[in-house]
Image (tube, rainbow, N blue to C red):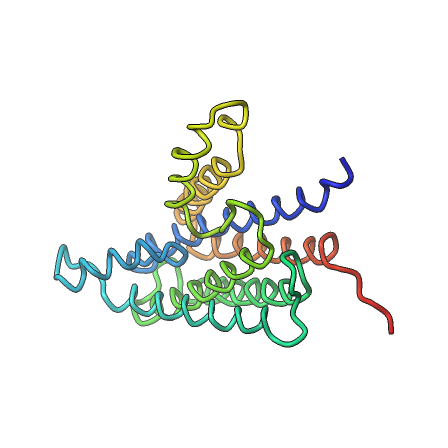
Length: 231
């Protein structure tokens, strides 16, 4: 049982980050002009329909979010793969740094939301969506570095396909309760919670996302980081 503890902790961390994705996607779509901040597939579809002029869908917001997500993922990849980065999958100190930066960004967004009110002006919505998408891009690379199977924290479509086409077709006890199903349920739960908290104030789900990300960064650093080698 003890040998499985690190794997269980890594799984719990990525589950919590998946929940954060659901929360901030609800905030983005409901409060930031129908922009997905974690689900880039949704942004690409909205952007395509917006370019076609369908239903007055936004173009600038999804485009900026896509760019911010991609740029942040690129920079996070450089950080994780740079000199001194860990060569093996798993939690490393740079993961803690990236998640801490993400939590700090979400905290700043919480403050901005408090200052701007329940319904930020469009000129404020786009930078808020871009900053949130950047956090999600970095988080996606963190999930790849931690490398918990079937837990990407931001992608559900491929997870659903794997659940139905691989897990369920094999049958057995694992077909009922497994991490693929957990990822889908958790991101759904995050969206539900995010949407409900939006009824109170847009700052509330941002605050929850910030607190959850900070908790994951702290607990991951304490329980999963490799020990510092003394010279």
